[in-house]
Image (tube, rainbow over all chains, first blue to last red):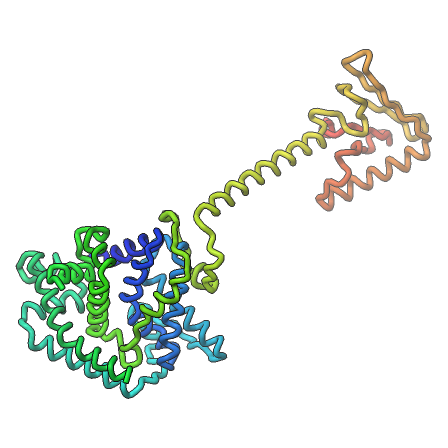
Length: 199
Length: 233
């Protein structure tokens, strides 16, 4: 397995040198995962979004103290957890007694905290799931294998190349083509919902 | 958009670039379109792994965070190499308006060491004075004379007057202090000193010991006092 923190480390270094654009890439990368984590504590979707934003702003302000001993996402997830707990305290609601697993978002006791998924959101996520599954089923096997080994199994390009008995460059190309196919199917879906939201 | 650039973004998403600090990252940082691609590819992976559900699937705070941080000053700090404390940052509420820089820690450590050395110097100086290593006890002090030996003999029973002999190295500047106290007063003083030494030893308090003669009752109920530093003799 490769050290997936390298790109994060480089981005953090750039932010610390004054490049706010590098922080924007970190936000874009982690916002969904951070939001998912916070949604384990907070049920209201609008509040989840607010606290997610707050967590990233706190992280930005605290970045001078980040020295890279732990992975950036571990550090960020702790900030997000504290932001969610503080929010609950501020709103005079009791935070859950169990901690949340930062890798999966699951609680220690293994139960899901109460959810408040809107019907639209649920419908959209279901549509996304279905589209991803359909696109994966329909794409050439070598593309599907390369992408799933990368995304689900966390294998490096080198390891995938070894499994698929092909050069790393081919793996790189296959993964990109698989993503490109998926992107082509998902983009209109998200755009449609964004238009609906505006209307 | 150039497929080659998109492929580089795909590699960056998987952290599979030869050098993370290379041109690919610079290009992503410069191009709004590549930034969008970077976000979608990460989002795609999150969705595939089920890291996003209906509640958060539409969360996109990047623009809001960008706007909020516009007024924030850009960081211009050197890259730190010592261990970071996540707990401090997170559990302390992350009041980043009060963020000590790396230099301030070094300065604080330097000040701490300097203060410790200064305190130690003062303490040693005082202790040397107390023990009479360089100067005589204040009780016996006389200008700049060096006291070599002090001997006091007295007889309580006889009520004799105490005599103190001080031998000096210099002839002209020598001063001899001798106390002529009445027998009654001497008895009271001796009793007080003996009592004080007992109590201060029991309490572990030095008290006025550096300033006082050590008094004990020797054989024949004679009181022998001696300066500090000669107690064991």
